[in-house]
Image (cartoon, rainbow, N blue to C red; front, side, top):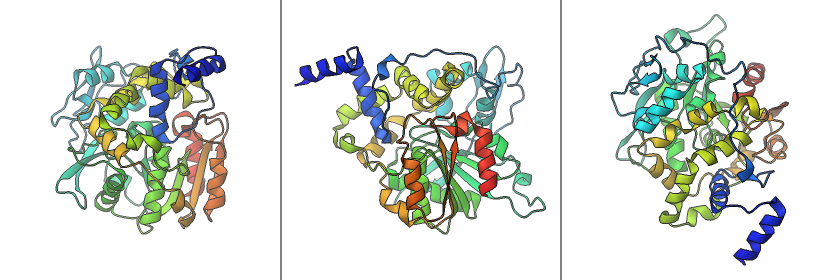
Length: 394
């Protein structure tokens, strides 16, 4: 049967799919995605100079701001290459490979944001230990102060599956003038240190709840991108007193769980996780995320997306998330009472196009804004348009 299946796939795609490609499709299924193209193996990286959004002017790395709370990144300097120094074993620079990757990154927006990474130690309910949640927040108290029109709205931004807060590197800086902005690394992903604790959906949500209570200290607008949308939906439905408004950016919400992946034995899941952080898979997913692939699906973007994959708890964090079955929030969507904004890239190749209309039908107070000529990540590909829609909504 397997042989016949392979022959059928060969006829359909015009070439035999490798075992590695099948593994890529399986791992990408963790995010609950659907793919319009079956020829994933034909996507090969063709790095090109990035557009104006990817400013790489010389000398930009000099004098990076010291992180106010010690996530461990003291600063970034350019002396032929970027050198990251750590004091507390940060995942970003924890291995020689991550050190090499950050040294090669050129995008100034990424380096600026990485230089501002902070951490906060939080105790989670039902846990006997603490976790160190990494985030980028306001530069100083003036960013939080009243600006003559009342207190700035607080926004907590949550990234997608196995990503990091650096995903918001182009949106974050242009929102700071008008909002009190926090980009948070979800427990088990990004540069948050789980300290070996369970990183299932229950604890991912609990860490964000404690972050809002301990750091922001007031109700927030939750912005979730991709799988971060499921995280935001879960919090909005469970803690309406903490989430005043909801923003969903190409959000996952209607596909529950991880299918058969959660039932696979650990000795199978671990090799799949190695595939998940491999260059071929990351570049394939990188290309699928954008409409303008030539300008944005670059080698530099690939390196940014892999920075967090080499911290010590990356395997254990993903493993506990998979074994817990992932997020299942489809039944919670209709119960969302907060004003909601759905922002959707019109050329999203990862999530079903009809999902954006499902959100509008299911949530009683929901607005939809479609971003033309844009893929799965409008906050990276069209940050100015996302900012415009946020200002209009908030």
